[in-house]
Length: 188
View 1 (cartoon, helix red, strand yellow):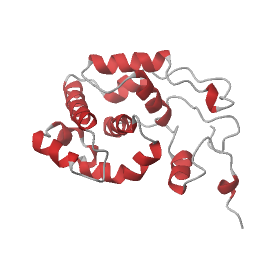
View 2 (cartoon, rainbow, N blue to C red):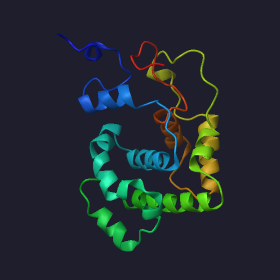
View 3 (cartoon, one colour):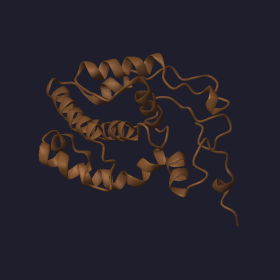
């Protein structure tokens, strides 16, 4: 008997079981909590210029290398940790992206110390839901006024590597917008 999700229309992910599972069970579902959102922002920054499937395949490696994305631990990383991460084949070894992950952990800890939260900032930029789903990927924007505003808000509190396109990808992944195309099995 054929599994119904094998025949389903998906926005993406039909060519790889890991990608299909991510599409069906994670992408576009609401993500809350500072640690979970920090992880997603780091992974979105790491993905810049690469395929998301590459990041998915390395996600457990990232979680191990970055101590479960615990912001307090990552914020304390020093030069030796940067070199350790640069030598880790289980992650993307890009010095600027690694240093951005550390900078962003420090910004998150400072934000929390001031009584704020990443969750508050991110979800304050959720747009009004679209009435009609995108018909194709051509109808999905690369950035929006909300992602531009989110990038500015994060930069204002010390985050880096959070441009409008990266922030829109994070908004999609974290459920702030539902960009599953019309007819997609995961469309809410």
